[in-house]
Length: 514
Image (cartoon, rainbow, N blue to C red; front, top):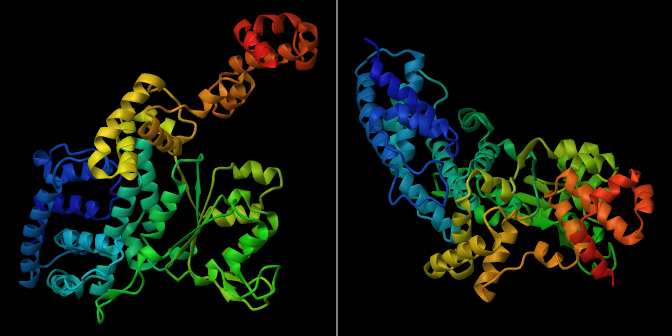
């Protein structure tokens, strides 16, 4: 007699996939549907903080209840001597792990929130968790490897809950570009194979550097913070505590904000007298960062080439020296770097080292522009505005402010406005409407100077090739006053120039010059 009948096998297979699937991708919904069939109800689409369906996911509730009933039955069969294949034992084990996570999901979440507020969470429920581990996993322990250690499994469950919370609350919006970004962050933390991660990789990914690229204002620091707050932290069952606090493990540093000497001092530290003003010894961030901490190097594309050499050494050998010292120190944490620049162009121009680039991009995440997100899901702007309004004025008055801002955008900018400053510009819009009941974008300010407006539109990639040519012909003609000279400068035929000059733009240019 087999351990599982056909319907039980189908359900356990679906749950096995759910236990390890990336929760921020639509495939999670498909496996929920496969698990409970006709009982499945549509619920919220891809998970994101803008969704408020008014209660727990009913599909998860049904799946957890069925998982518990089936796991209890299979445990009794195994204890009674029913023979099982390796495949059936794997399915049973995954079912038990899924059940354990959801049985303690609420307590794990409470521990995450309490820790996020800077307090020590009560982890006394580990005793019950360990007892359930023994109850459900022991029947398969002698016949299946590896045998899960309750403390490690507890640490993994806590990490998964913490990672979900960090990603869910950091990346707002239901568009597919936002969903893919959340999924990328999840993979950066756990890789594409969560099963392999929890068995062998959980202490090794700190050596992998993550490079976050994308336009300015798209939340690259939010990505870095979510990764940093989601690292694996071992659990000590004797003290019922974790060795490090996630909220104290993130060290962000903007490399474009300081001079090269100060950057070196901040990152590597210095000895007394190493440079003018170094009146005492100082430990840098690479030195104070704990083993499970993360140093975030923002705007890595701006850093001086000489510092790039030192950063390369940190990534290659995990060692560095304080300024003015010859003693090697060891960096034990993880590095996340970010840039809005095209590093391929920077390398070609000789401003960025190729060897450093290949050390940085072991893992790469790209943040989408706000325009890309809104093209996929125009209603996402309402979620984002509400989120930004909550940060500005708090929970209670946020809804009213959000309605005002969205109405103002619809009336004055239109839903096709490209938001060249991305989410950062949207935040500025919320603030301006709150204070002045209006928002004047930089592109509209620039419109009073047609030359500046042309530059802004080109940088924002809003013009076609035909429009660029026409406006540039008009600009040069306004300077020369001659079709012949304009044609000579641009390498075009005189008749072509004449047909391309825009009379309205020409009048504005000539008026501006006078």
